[in-house]
Length: 373
Image (cartoon, rainbow, N blue to C red; front, side, top):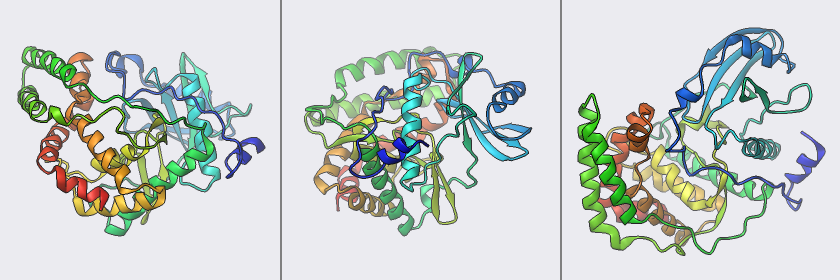
């Protein structure tokens, strides 16, 4: 890390610019990731490592593939590393990767559990080979945990960690001009999308149990939209915007013992309403894996930890809860991947996510209370 980068991470220092170009989610119109990113050959890994001071390559093992990249555990004579191959076009752009790397460098310098990328022999943190971009990271040992595995103190600490990350990002990233409005989903557009997805699901071959579930949930969502369309949040009803991780959930957190040892995968670093990330993260960490219901006791402790660390009041969380609820009511990215991209990798996420939306509509006041009190 350069002296300028270290100084920029200190309170009162001028923040470094960070490119905000990042999608709301994976590009629904892109081809399946598998067609864009064949596995990385061992020889390619060996060639890449020659640019680093990592010793002799001993082993390359693929790790669970994310939706935006490929990852490999690399063992060398000097130790273990994580090799990341950037895949999704929007997040693999050079400016986006540079922004992520600058931010993670500075967050690590502030003492937060964020592993920064390693520089090669020339000082660069990104290597381009065979038309793809790669970054090398230290291997962080640890394990993922579900929200149900966290005790109440750990839930509070997790919320506080996210709050500290948001505050630190405000120090190290470009200043944010608060928007006058942030658009919300149009239920008329959602209804049109539902109609298209229902047609695609009905014609899908082979037609199976998932397609039947999709058709049922899509019809159900039309009814929910009709019942709740008058509750659409105003575009101007929005809390403070700031730089956020963009994908804060259990699979991007590694624990060692009782504490988070690493916050991973900063591909979706962007400017968004900060408290909305806190709400969205809770729905991913503290949900039941089948029914989608939230563990509201744990959510309450998590939200208190976040509010205190981020300086976010109940009113800001109230706005965030309502906007994320509306977002979920209008969101079908998993089905768009299946039926528009012919990419089934998000299928396992759909049953619980769809069930959570129905449950949230029924328990709206209880969910709101858990976040604000």
